[in-house]
Length: 92
Image (tube, rainbow, N blue to C red; front, side):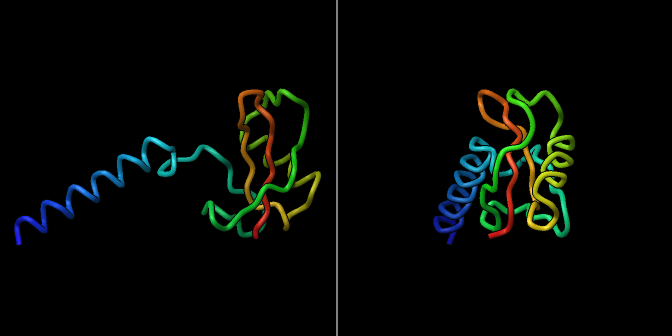
């Protein structure tokens, strides 16, 4: 029993470590629009908004996306990438 418990604990710890190192546990992105879609599996890329590089915050990105594409379909917005673009997402 103790062996199974240790194996389970190790597996859970390893999974948490992988999730934390890949950024799955945290996100600075902005849920926006009607309903939002905070889960990665619930959204797909819709388009870019604003200038490149985008110098605003994620909240500014959300405002830009909703103004450009409407809400719905926009449910998530984030400033991301090495060249900092504002990316808009919609529900699948």
